[in-house]
Amino acid sequence: MIRIGFGLAAALLVAACSKEHGRPTPTPQDAQLIAQQEERLKAALKVPDSAKFKDVFVSQVSGDKEVCGRLDALNSFGARTGYQRFIMGDAANVLESDYGSAKMNESWKQYCER
Image 1 (cartoon, rainbow, N blue to C red):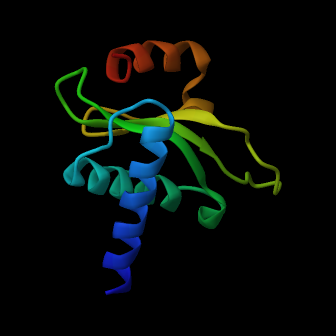
Image 2: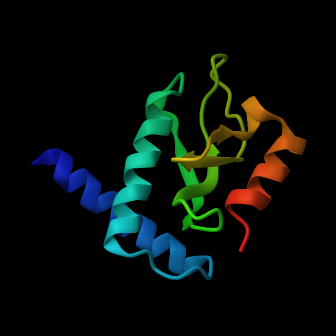
């Protein structure tokens, strides 16, 4: 029950944030996909509870649904990384700090730009 409540709260938060940045409100299915991909990304972090997401949206530029956005979290030294882009989905699972800016720019164009 708590897990369902968390997913619903995350979906509502994503919906509120998307209107703020000029993106359409995600469908309930897209909001659920965003919440799932954010949880997958948080699970891979050194400090999962430190994750802060912004500018998150679902893109279908490549044909597959990819979740694109920005993430800030604590690193292993306890410092914030600063917001960096991420792409999570069937075709790509990429965090800018792991991939490098040049490759991330290419991937962002391929999977996230409209």
